[in-house]
Image (cartoon, rainbow, N blue to C red; front, side, top):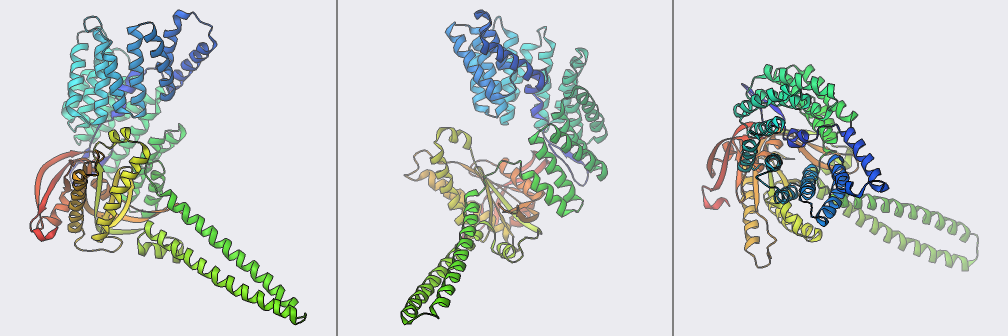
Length: 611
């Protein structure tokens, strides 16, 4: 949900999917839902109600509880009781609530499973409204998965069913959400046609929250079309309504878009004002995801205005809210070794004091005591030699672990000065990999086997990257990130990165064909981009070497838009490797947060001796 400035126009990508079915489903505010849920829970636990009301009470608790885990708890109770008394109505509602809760948690596959289970308890001839609303919910889940054909199919089915019913709001919601999906697919004209159908219905029914989302979505559509003035007018009106209603989460997102609009106009004061306002509002109401987005936006603004130190500061705050896999164990081991080394030094100092005391006493005693002193000196020297050997071994081990985390030059700078200066590299090639359907695999494999399997793949990737003189940056879940052209600039980093990419693809394919596969192999997709980045060490204790900038964002988008078993590259990388590799032009493809970008599949080397 970012706007980027190009030479001629501002391009905005996907609409706000999170403002789709979930927000349109729950009319009361979070606090109102919580109050209703808590009062019903007390009533249920007290047992002071007519037994015939039990299903209705459990139904309302599951529907109103804003905590998805709590909602699932009471949904299970509702389903158990409803199945026991053979109540199709409440069984349907139980599965519907379960789907809503899983969608809120981000478990989209489980949400779909629950919604399709609820479909089994609907009579099409008498419950058309219920069926239309369920299709709307299913379409929203497919929207979150990025499944365009199913999104259009289920929203269209919902609209066809709901259009002839009295419930105009349900119809308008389905129309609005389909428009929101077209916005996400980068088709603002189609989206505006639908928004212009749903908006008047919300206005006529005096549904202010829905009208606010409609205005905000129109603003995003105008922003995609490059019509910043109309975008600003609609988003500003949406924010005003949402402030009146106290619905702050979408306000923080819309404020970020306002910041983008003013950044496009080079009005940096206004751009920073809107981003800071978004951040403060997110902090005030504990909206962690929106806080992370605001930190990232401020980092981008500072980077674009030339304030690298401020950009780094806000980027550090951003990564504090980002899900990532960090090598915590290694860092903890380094800390433990440093403590052990200090303890050894302290023990040595104490031993030296004791030995000196023995020497002083021995000088005033007889020959027998002198003999004892000699023995003491011998033992002391033996202890010192052993201790020095231990210290040297632990020192070498600490340095080896440090080199596993940071590039050699960066590690040396950290040891000498205690800090690492951020550096800008004008030309770096960044590669991302991602395993297809990893989430589905992770639900079927026990955690120990899953971690072992990932380690097997990533260890091989490390060997390939090292072979070509490239730099591993980090792993993020099942994604692997590396870069070429840093910490020392090299001319052919783009070619080396593509060569490494082909070896990664070959390794993954070999694993699938191996006898030890046992159905636990993955398909991998790769994305590559080239451009300037800023690199440095993030953190002061649990530190890691990281890179950031627009080049990294585009490389991630290249991976997202790639396909299993293929390498997808940007125009920048293509210009550097086109004489060495055969590339298939894919055309200009709509990319999240970037608009349309030229992309290429790398098919293979022009000469066989390249790989």
